[in-house]
Length: 405
Image (cartoon, rainbow, N blue to C red; front, side, top):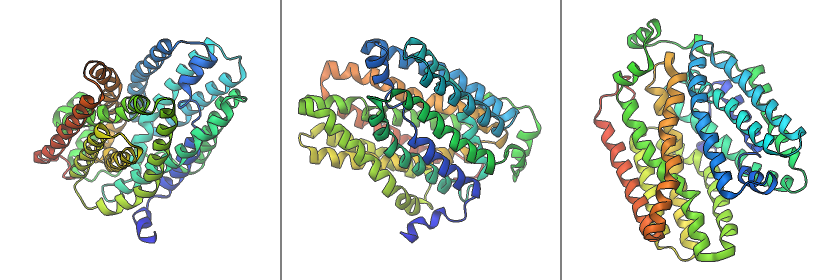
């Protein structure tokens, strides 16, 4: 265990503060996991209306992230995080104080938009605090912190939901404020402190280079999100086609059994993230992510042939290992290939591009399932995973502008 934790030693103290904040914030992430139930059971929407609502919420977040990225690069990471996290928490507190109604739903959209504005600033801040020698380890630690919290939060939210619904909103806000207090006290502004080690970086800093030009000058920032889009499309089936398959095979027990797989996923993430971070730290991040994509593909091949729970657990193990390998390298790779002057804007645009795969995945695969059945859909998902992995391996042929390969 001591050896496994060695990669996390010597990181900037701010990263440890953010790690604790991630745990606290994620423990209190009550609203999002329960959103569909709140919309249907408490507000009275139909399933179709709730689906449309969640889609609208996701659409509204896109321009908010773009604005947040611009603000993070112009006025600073810290101001954006503090200001919009406070607004998001305040909106949730209002949700907890007013009677549950359609107004609550509108306030949920507003709160999500506020939090979305601060998201690119967090990504830029994490990149500013680290360099290529420790960035993968830092992102791995933050990823693990979020999953520790998520392993606890939905359980607490489930207990509160039936009889104490207002506390779902207020508790979410309070944990956000606790994490924000730690941030305000211990994390300073990083934008002006970034050390410019390369002449090209200085040229970016000293000129008003457009974000579009940055993408053109660094084509890997265009090709990489396309491969990640495929991976996200595949990963979306963990929450879409797999529950449908569990329902087909196990009937009313399907939802409970899917919950067991979700708990198994969380346990593997928490226990295996340090191990995989340690074992892969010296390897090319693109190759590691490509292997992660193959893990996705193997998972859905297993799912396609599964009739018993043992195989579903084996498939979920493969998917979770792939998830970890991709997650601990994804953000670090983007940060390593982005000039510090544009980190906020790049951190807002790339998740939109990759997130399109997650958003479109259920719609595309839902149609395929209706026409061809679950087995064929699993084979198609596996093929998409392999295409993404081959693409990731192929990106190694590109010359890295920042020499971070």
